[in-house]
Image (cartoon, rainbow, N blue to C red; front, side):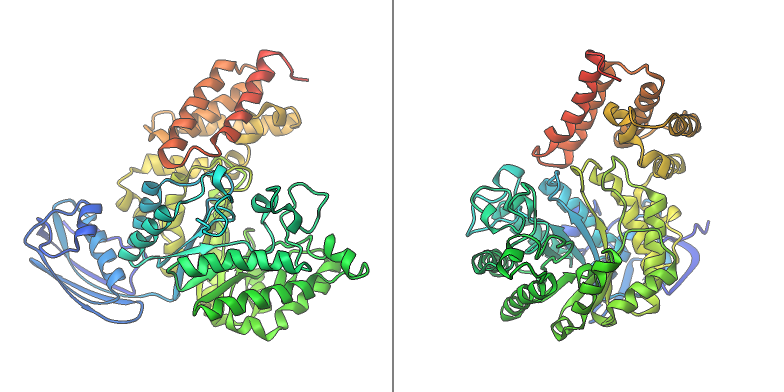
Length: 550
């Protein structure tokens, strides 16, 4: 009778004697948790003694649960216990102690797909259940700016009511919702507006996203954006960006200083003002780490930037050290050591969902596993699991849920995430198999390359044959697996891709995919950004209709 108890992340200690008690619900579970997780009102009592820290002890006896420790962690584990076997509660003794103080998920909503409120709430509940404690939302121009009501209005920006709703909802689950901003680089969607284009560094590049930090007016504009957030956001932490400011000092700034490159000096000056303002409001700033060391620049550029990390002002900042490549543990150790400040450093792996319709599981899981292994060794202060939306956020948010679970299990458990996903999601092994097969690089990376016919036309015959053989094998392997609607879309995209490779695709095939994709997009997001993705399908339809293939 003793079914294995599966808890995310794997507890330090878990003793199960094989006995199951009949469970009819809780008499005193907080109402929001009971309602959101469909836990009935019943006779069981939870006796919780709250304590500081990231620890939790749970003891289950017939009719009651004794819990001591972090409120969020204890309730999350209790909910997971109710999901082990419907109508029963296992007789267990559990002790949990999590290593990372900051356990965050960072979601880009600025590149094409803004989640609706229900989707954001779904994400928060999932993060709570898995024992994350921070949800960073990457906004660029989509924060409800009071001083600049025109910014982001055509891109689905969040209203103040929406922002407050999601912040308060996160707070009810012990999840701090943190605004993730851009105040120097990656300001494309703000600086491309005619009213603010005078503030950008490269005046001749329509989509340049770097602020002209040599301009007092431009710096004041960025600080006003920041002040808006500091005055309206409840979070203790605030992410103030700072990544990929490659054009800094190369345009208007260069002209003003006699054609001498001053990128690092401008960076330090601008961020000194930003950090001072954040501290004035009693909040803790987070900054991306790449420009502090120049780690992703060419060697000749890196030597110019790498001294920035030595400035003492970074001692009072949390540095988000990011890398999304499937490197080895030693590579990540070296990256971490280069930044230093271990207690104030976050390891930031990525879920490889950008520029794709579906995340690359192979690449993402290798990146997460090795980066977080090095982070544990170096005793970093936390981690951020990042999901980006480059090229239009085509990848639906629902595809990320197993990777969010896997990342927590890798970070704080033993890494054996698959059976735990099945237990908590309720899916069967066949569906999980499909998720992993679709997440192979040869599938996830190439869906766009074959169904977008302008891309397919540039692909070599050898690559087409390789894709055709591997995709055919995967589809045959999944022929009898019943998939949920979102995964069925990926299967249909693969089938369309094979038709495209064989020269058999029809315009009606694209209409069908457009309809299915649009329906799924609108079920989880605002409509803004959808037309951009659908137009790419439409281009392929026109190529077919007018026989425009070369």
